[in-house]
Image 1 (cartoon, rainbow, N blue to C red):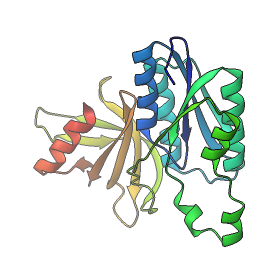
Image 2: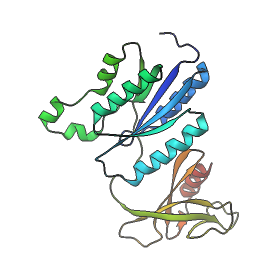
Image 3: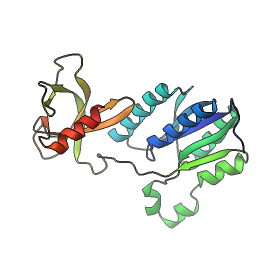
Length: 232
């Protein structure tokens, strides 16, 4: 199928199956062919929200606005079938010609009992069966998730403050010294002092992670390079 100008694309993001590459791919195609796109972010009604999911939501909304999405919609769904139905309905209502989404299933499905897998909805085939003329793009991915092992306590607002020109002279503070200090969330690592953990913030639409040791970033070359990359 040949893409035409003014066609519409849906970018599907999911809290447990998140990939920034999916959003970037949708925006890239929209720019290249001159058509509109919108972003659907699906959240489970029964899920226990982790900070990783909330950060993904914040990152996705900010980046979608910067990339020119016409809409960013958060939808609460019960299961995979509900997700597929919402996508099909939205695609039909907006005359969408392409859907871009992740092709990786949550790991929990592999551990499910046999009867659950038998009745499990294959959302990809469901979409294709109900939208035979749609272009469905699946992007496989592996996302880095520093919170998945439960090593960190709940986050609190903090600031990354630089006191000198030294490349690693960054310190964690509860209050900013100047307007240019980086604001974010600090998560204390369990069974450590209160100033050791991970500092998380959004820069240019992307979630960044900086590791903090005793109130400052690591004093190694690796630590300096990591921070330099995060602040870019």
